[in-house]
Length: 418
Image 1 (cartoon, helix red, strand yellow):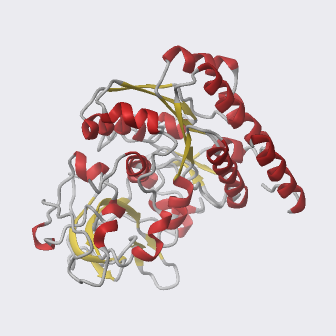
Image 2 (cartoon, rainbow, N blue to C red):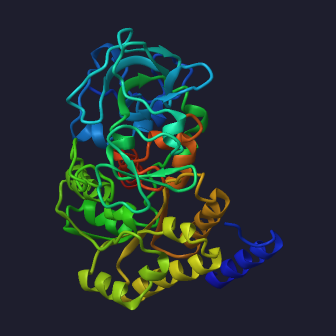
Image 3 (cartoon, rainbow, N blue to C red):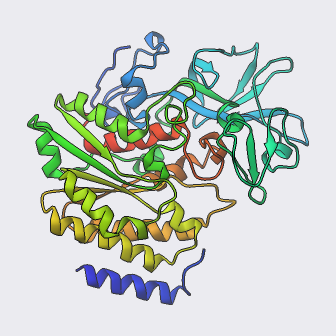
């Protein structure tokens, strides 16, 4: 079946001309409006007046698309050079605003009608407010803000910007330091028409590890991938507020909490790597030595950045799957498609081909599950800019988008409707 898939995919590529670069209620089918099915939203809270800002484990990890509250969604306000308006978009129109904070989540809180106004899902900065923002000239490298410098190679993490042809790459506060973090209640009827684009409970291919979790047995997780899975640009790894763990570390902690069992993690990921690195015997042997119950694989961003042929990516990823399944027959595998990177630098058509490869593996192999973060990120991209959710401006997620990885994984591996 696998060979048939590969043959089909290769023929497809040839035909298409080749590859280019508070308290939560759990209603069933009733809610504020009896004609709407709220069963798809098990974390829905009807008591909107009682909802207050918190940011503990549940608020960090609960998939927002399972309920009606979003905590600390990030947005970067930008200046419209024609109108002078400084604004940014949220995913949805807030029906109740809970908090608008700076990136530290504790230094500064901004007030509606004092610092900003709301127009639907748009936040608009008011004159005189000290809400941070970026101009178009800054974002394309034509104007360098005070305190930063334009370089060809980053040597100072706090100050250095690299112009990559109209897109700024940096690990400095240039992006994350200017992002707002907005918590609000929204109307689930806005998300409902597209809810199929959000991950949901599906453990048919990873039933062995799920059964171990349900039986409260010890579970070992291994991660193998690039800088995103390594956790690069997470605030804790880069030692700045609010010091949030990487998403794979939070997956470990939340699975342990949700299933009330012991979950351990060994993350073998290395920044800058491609699938060709991941399939090498050295990496496979490291996985085997850990003898995990569950392996997370995350490759594609650097393959895409190097314009690797889709067939080469497919061969390398399949090699990892085959080697692991041969040497660790009891290990379930989760394939993570990457969060969409900056489309000014990366070919989304080719990224979609990579994701199709991963879908093919899920269909062809037992105990291989795809969690499609790329699809989720494209859904978010309908209303938001990439720079709302990036930490380095090109391919690293910020803390909010890192939490979207977490929420996608938990939504797939845990049944919130229980």
